[in-house]
Image 1 (cartoon, rainbow, N blue to C red):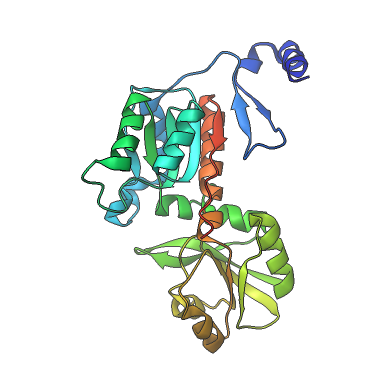
Image 2: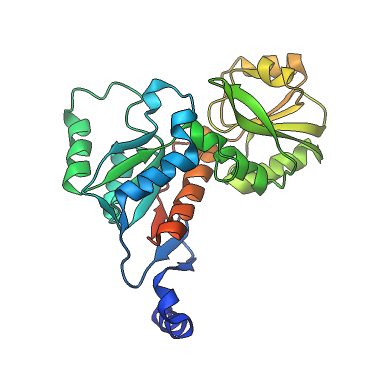
Amino acid sequence: MFSLLTCALYKLLGAKFNRAVKIFRLGLAGPVWFDAAMAKASLHSIVRYCDRLLRNRQFNDWPESVNGLQVENRGHVTRIAAAVDASLATVRMAVAAEADFLLVHHGLFWDARHPWTGRRYQMLHLLVARNLAVYSSHLPLDAHPRLGNNARICAALGFKRLEPFYCEKEQPIGFKTSARMARDELAARLEALVGAAPVVVPGGAEVCRKIGVVSGGAGDHLRRVADEGVDTYITGEGPHYSYALAEELGLNVFYAGHYATETFGVKALAEHLALKFGVPWQFLDHPTGL
């Protein structure tokens, strides 16, 4: 059936078919792109485009994030793999998917990556032997107004008229919006979005009116959040003391998972690159449960 559909689309579209056809299949972690002619893109072109799109040079971040190209390959990209974290596990998954470009939110250098022995040597060997480039984007991908984690979460939850929110390293990375939504309804929407019930701190009113969104581990600055005028805050995770502090501040807090809230940006960016450069992409789901 898949072959019949492929042939029919080729006859219908002719040469345009070689650009790419988006196919959704049950059981896959995300959409898969294929190209009948096995398209190939320049690694340099993709990196240069991503650096401009994400404004890496203008964005402040932790030094360990090393935004941009972290590992080079032989110069061409035929398949993109996207994952939240760069690790031996996701590198192995990318190799199994026959990818030569791994796009991640958390790169290779968050802790000291030396000496290169044991599992770290295995990862280095795989990267070089299997010609796998690694590109990482941390805060720039959180903050991007169209493709970023926070913009995509807001869009998926139906939030509109977004305002900049939550400065990190002297630039806003999140968004806030005015709404009128029952706390239980927001919890249900979040559960449907990330696939698991969020941890809810019911510190505020039952009706949420000003909602802020910051993906990842941004639950340790609730006073800053409250000072920005929100009564409800969505993030990934936070420390134990944040529960009592949220009650003190009169703030509803939703912890929807660090990993789960940071799948959106790499998916959106990988799909965008696939469309622009005509190469297939795949999301590698390696959840941490955190």
